[in-house]
Length: 148
Image (tube, rainbow, N blue to C red; front, side, top):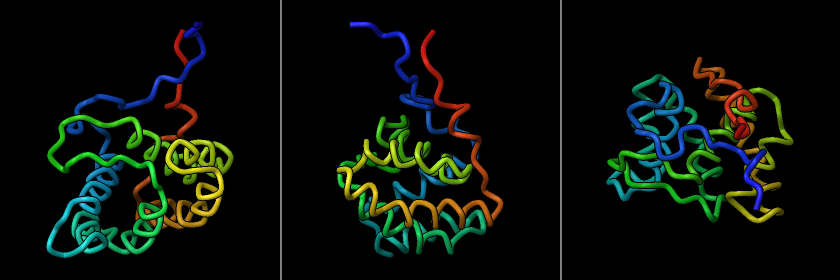
């Protein structure tokens, strides 16, 4: 089987402390959302996002994360980034950059086709809220490189 041209997932298996600031914020908020905290999923995500002045994005992040059936979020203390977390980060970055087809393709890794299509408005809203709050991710196309 040929391996040329397969994507190299940015940050896959990397240390979470080495992530850029915006990616770390989103990952921490998503992991807090998935963890059983006393404030509930949306409250836990809002607490993390409030540290960066983006607590309003928790309202938009909640329906997005609820709709992604195969999203496997690690524990908040897990030191590495999972493949589905990489897909989520790239989908948000693609939506921020206006690349909806790439974002939808990345969502297909996290949900069945119809569910991925239905969650697109939530993805775009969450990405836009983060962007308006000054939390801009690097362009997704630049980060999704192919192996030489």
